[in-house]
Image (cartoon, rainbow, N blue to C red; front, side, top):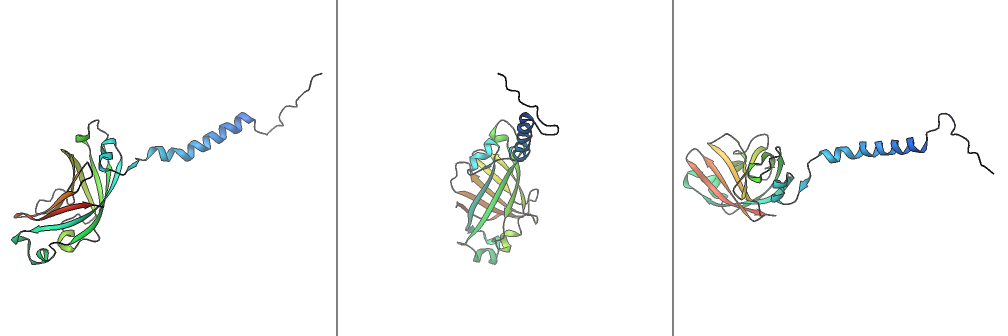
Length: 174
């Protein structure tokens, strides 16, 4: 006794074709996720090629006489900033990594914000055991520089103007 199974009707997809279609749709939806840089939660994740967001409180600890009265009045104050660090290169060694950054300086007073790029973009690189972020790259007479240790401990910042460093302080990790 043999049972004859009828052939699939014309125009009806076979099981194999339907499976291939589902697989193709899944790959189409997941491919964009595979092409994006992952986001790390630690600064050391920059060494793995991840993009990282760091939130810090910039505290003004000292102001030189040439810093001016407005900046001196801010001594002891803290301001929250968020720094998004983006890996652009894929070198094998961590010290060779660098990239661009977006810095949210909305809470900074004008005395500090004026030393950052108007576009809120910055450049970063690994220097020793720290990430250095220059907020106004290529400008020597009015630049806010941040140094954040890769181990996640508190960092330091400086404000440089034509006479040199006019203010500095701590970057407290949040």
